[in-house]
Image (cartoon, rainbow over all chains, first blue to last red; front, top):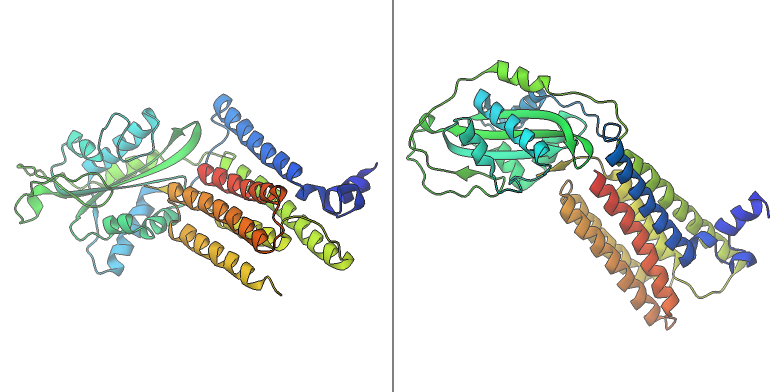
Length: 301
Length: 82
């Protein structure tokens, strides 16, 4: 039994494999599922023992995120948001808190809401909101992802907001080197001639309204933006996403190729057998392969 | 092609699934639920297809389950990693 025999046994219908490519047999599919799960287990183990090797390398800067955000607002005829050093500090603290307590959420595991960070830095607000993103490759992709989500777009295009704070911070989240982007929106209490609102609904990343009696608009600062930018690094790392995607495309491509060969040869040789429909498998696997190819890294919240 | 309408229904199921997958892009939790839903829908489609053709066998159900499982496991882990 040489290599040729094994290749034919695995990928072509033949009497040695009961007239169906061995790789399409349920037993072989089960082995492939097991192999992929084992591969993910190895990847997780590697992340635990060597967390600095795997991660996402990104090219996101707070300045660029601000520029694109204001560009999107300008397209809708809205006034640009201006950087506020207190909001920058709040965004930095939020990112630091997510890394310190290892969570990816608007509310921390201990129940700490985004609004506590506003209060912590002394930003008295009439309106406030928060957008989060992680593991995107560049600033444009981050803002586009927010614009494609109704709740996040509402924050970006909210006419009530006047100021913004940004943090782009690298760190380790769940064992993976990650780039977090925190965008905090606000309107200082004193700046708007509107009576204070007394309801608190700060759960979703959409607009939240709170009551604060005193007003204290913080000075605008470009220095704070530069400080936030200093935190941005581009670690030269292997991405677990790309490693998974490569193996995923290889495995699905292998099955798809075997299915195509099987369809052609079964039709030519007029083989009759009891099995699932290859055309159906081809459509299903092909569709999910397309989904895999189109999936890009990054998540928003 | 006598099975054309069956394949058309499969294409419709997958199109709805991929449409939702696209709409909820970057919302990983919902995308994972959609992927699992697509896998389950595929198995159900396979069962009904072979029942209609009066050629259903437990081995076939097992095959559809494994095809759905490998595709879904791969996509779910990719979404988790992204």
